[in-house]
Image (cartoon, rainbow, N blue to C red; front, side, top):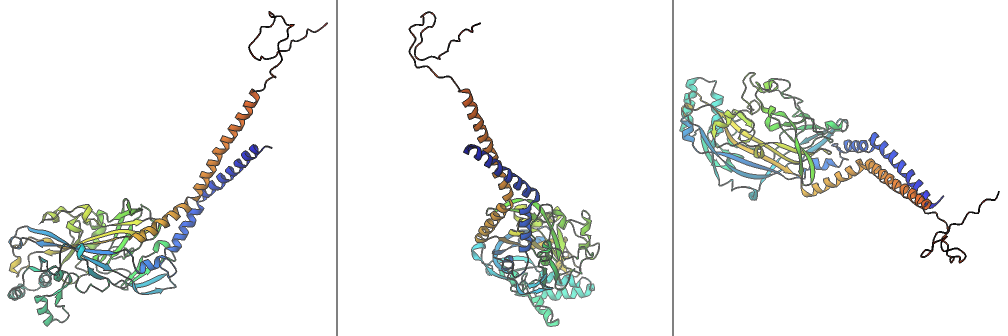
Length: 514
């Protein structure tokens, strides 16, 4: 057997083995299963897992951008006209949120943690100095007092109204951005504090929230089931809330938004418990995006999350008391926040009923600036970019006994909104790209084997064809020897014509004798 034949047979054998093994691995999905099992094991909140440290101390910087609605026509609004506001901001703060007091429970299947948050002002990302810039907004302590007195007698309300007026307190106040955000000593609350010591004499939208946490959380570590990775087991000792009017609305579902289980698919709904909204919300797949060279799935709250119960009956449970419902796009959260009738929405009433938008001049909702979304890397479930946007509003309406409200049209009045953003840092993005490259190569290794088998099969075909062609050419070029002898002079010139050069010698056949 020639070396060429040996090469052909060897190529055929190797190609056949590669194709058989590769196709078997593709069908059995051995490597994909191995990768998935590795991911399920790795993405757990155990001290041995690599993701535990990043969960404990999140590396991406988180920024809180605060925007305020400055009221430009308070007199016209108090006279019964439409309010006009002007957005000012952002005033940006870097948020730090390390996990503290961590302890493992129930054989490592659950983990207890606090998540205190602290804020540091970032001037280069802000429009001005919050300690200097002035904003005119609704006097929330005053509205809270009116709301508390709404069930009292008319004469008592009138007397208290006159006393409040003597203090120089009105429906709108003018303060610095820093005071409105982080707190100031309010004259009305100070008077109430002398009568009821439990009333805090300071007020601010973020008063006592710098350096504090949103409650005590117990999370599932994901050891028993990777789909439970990061899910909340209890919040402040509760597995469900008690202030909404249905069991479904009171459920504490999903994670806190910092982590999600690996191997996310486009068809699932992701749940987040938002303590500041006093409820759980769900997010649905929107589109594929790319962040710093990393492919991701974008999830966002669909319109039915804050839809009116008339259009989405499952939201009936968020009407408290039962049947007292607002329209689409807004949620009254005063049931879990004592005091003023606070309402939350998306910024500029994005996805809300047009009546809320049209009631205020100066609002212009749009998806790019006001949508809440999460960009998740689907293999690991890690958020690589997040924008959480929420607006704080207050209900203003006429209260008998308070003359300043007698001409008011009931309005859900915007106070401010926050844009909480986080994007994966460059170092983490580089590590993520490397990890995904390794996962892709390992997952597609069977396909590489099949590809090599196909290439060798093509080489085999080429070698076989060239070998056949060489044999055929050899057979077709067989010939008799060309004569180099000179012409025989005995041959007649007429019997055999002379030719130039050599010619094929044809030996005459001798006649057979009888």
